[in-house]
Length: 280
Image (cartoon, rainbow, N blue to C red):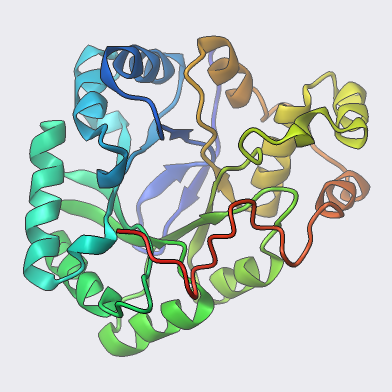
């Protein structure tokens, strides 16, 4: 299936596909096979993290895939326990060694960990890592507007991307507005609500039937029309292919509103509020 996937241009000029592959829990030989198959099926943006303990599997999948390295955008993330400047730089190097890569296209600070309060120092290390050629584009994950503003104010460097929990139960409208204002691209983790039955909800299924699409395809399309980049995780080639097949239809304003109507203020599915949550 030959698909033309639209792209977003980040504030540093890097072009990123409008959908990517989440790899949380894809590990070992099975994970390598699933990720290599996804690359061959058309995925170019692959999202990993130091804490997923699968950067090695990502590197092996790149070797096995038929896609040249320079056509892929590989992302990893800095863990909370490595926010100190020197440790952050060593961790980024370690990430590269694990994956057998010369550079990451994207690297994000996984969580701000505001109680520990070393995320500005971590950001300074990321800026240095980009200068050294370890990373093409630097961003963050789970940062609230106040965290973003502090980074920009104290370093003068705006993240290219912020990866946040975003799904129909939590549409992040205020956060997305802030990103747009700052010129930061929004990426959605857990775009389908991970294990939640939203894809089978009668309202979603009905919208899907109107377009000849599944509930999951409808929700992923909703993300792209919000201007966010969803990164659904799937180890199944059938689901991987279906998740990419969302660029040949368009949701109406009414359908978009119907999906957004599920959103609520306390819609985080795992209670991980970045103003308090600490991930190490």
